[in-house]
Length: 266
Image (cartoon, rainbow, N blue to C red; front, top):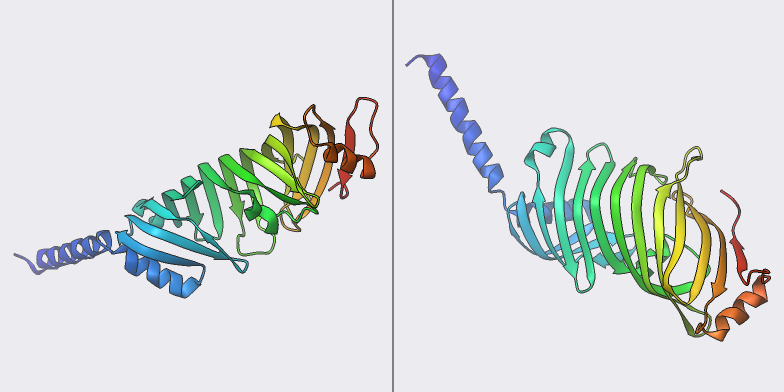
């Protein structure tokens, strides 16, 4: 056997051995190292391999808050690593809270998500949506498409957004909890985008609600600013406090609706 063939056989053996090691790479070692380096999450009771594994819980650290994902299962694409991204299918459940779908994290600080479904407590969004109202409820998100770039910057650029929100059992607090019911929200990017930020358009409809709603909401993702331009009309059976509270701040229109405007057009 020639020296060239010997070298080729040795190289092939080394490559096969390395591939075998990577294939069997324990998930607990990888996640523990990543957690220590980033300080962004805490893995609990991890098993399986890097490519297909599970954890009893993964706790996300973000903005001084902790967000437990609960039991997490994942499948990671090895091919995606060669193309400069981290593509995985995730399935996480923590009681009524659920997250599942496809996520692709690019090494260039980008993200893409497809058919991503989330069910979480609405209070989770209080730090992201600084509305001047105390509220509670449960949110179910069905995100068909989502893409964003420059995730490490203060103003990430959202390039694609298409999805629906179902806000269930929404209630606001004006000294006492006032039930409003269930509402649907259509999520999309606004047609005219400002320079250096992303403008999100929300179309709100009442589904099984105490208050009829008609109108739109705009959100600036980077500045966390908002503009609300909606009409509200309490239905039969709604708390009298809703009409009283709306009447204190807004004029009742001829059609029975109260026009509510918060913030300035974005």
